[in-house]
Image (cartoon, rainbow, N blue to C red; front, side, top):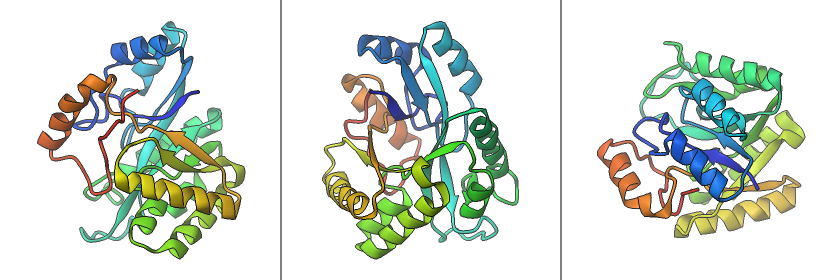
Length: 233
């Protein structure tokens, strides 16, 4: 088992997982690899890679992007969603870094560093795409009661990424997450899209939960659709 959706302290005002604690915890539970998917970028990518490599743990380069319909639209009411991208090879690493750079350009950044589906399609080679958390496109459609839109969204990504697209379910006790998980599993079975289980980890040990919540809420970072319940490593 490998954690494929993990936020480090480089997810600013969001996660409290420090590299040394991450390594300690991974060794405790016997994991030999980890995907780090910080929000909107990879500020700690080089440092994390080096420290994990020294510890004998494989680092999987990733990012949880903010994706919108069109980055040219600069409207605070326009929706954006979360999307997880993981690198499966060197081509993917280069493309992921390109997407991060594009998201930060003045013409694309608005409230958040953003990409859109066109950019993702152009620079998607070598990437594995996960549908992300409750703030992802598929999950948001399910929460809105629009199952057909959730299916259409999943099919659009499947058409673009094929076997490299996965629907994400998360092992949180949040009641909304549980209902969304059930529907995602149904959609995955109906459409033939595989599912992957993640924890969307923002803190290292269960006892850190109270500190994580204070850190995120005091930073006014928590968004609709994000849960910080049971998301430890």
